[in-house]
Length: 174
Image 1 (cartoon, one colour):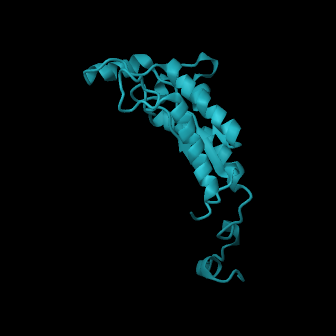
Image 2: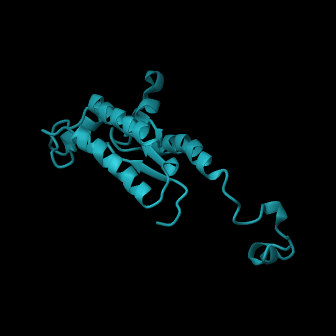
């Protein structure tokens, strides 16, 4: 694997489905934890340091909105936010055990009992606002990982205006 600066691992929303209602997507909690741990260990085995890995907990579930989606598909509510919380806690524990960063999306979206339904398009999947929320909270973690990297191109003020190709494609003597 080329030397990645950061890798995100974002699982759990489907894994946390209820076994009796959605056995095809359900992954038992201990298996979910083991899978996350195995992914981090695999990355370490191919020389990706744990400092470059970011685990992301599943987002919360808006049960009322998701139940409407389930009814439209002819099934019963197949997830509970409390169960998603167990998977989020398992993700946090794996991150602690493995020494990786973690973004606790489940807690952040519910902080101070805020209405998080606008972050979800159907009660389960992130909406555009939810993707923006994720982006805003993920960026600081990514910035920590990339801030020390060297520039690949010159700073814009250092580009020779008359002949930009000299400073962009040349050997650096501009």
